[in-house]
Image (cartoon, one colour):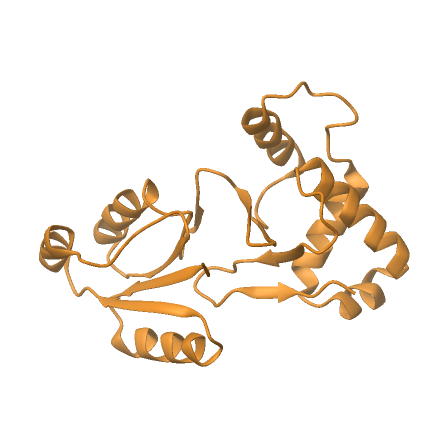
Length: 195
């Protein structure tokens, strides 16, 4: 079963544009137009589409009160909820169908704290992500392209591969086939292909 994207917006042009692009790339997409809080009330009572842990929600809503209510509504029902104010997830990174998603706004200490909390492990050197590993992950996320990253930070492909694999292993991802991905707020899933 593939990941499903649900787009919720009060901007019909945004909704049409982004859903069209994602559908063309083969992504399962459902679009929902909500113009105000009254429509939200009707939406929560009559929603017929299925929400599951295989769902990622993209929110583009200008009214802060409505945005907060939508985040609260979706938060416990889906894997990841993305809004203009950032990522909302019970886990700040996750692996699904061989794809690894990483919240680019996390600091090294926050990421290690999350790892310890969700895996119930001790904070030992072998379980903790190092500065170098975190630097490689962060630079991959920032560059958005592996080749651009090599030239930007002047590190060999072999070194990047080693530290990336090491960090992913500490996060519980043992397969070298996992791709490192990011979810920039309000944009389609962006994949950094493994070389």
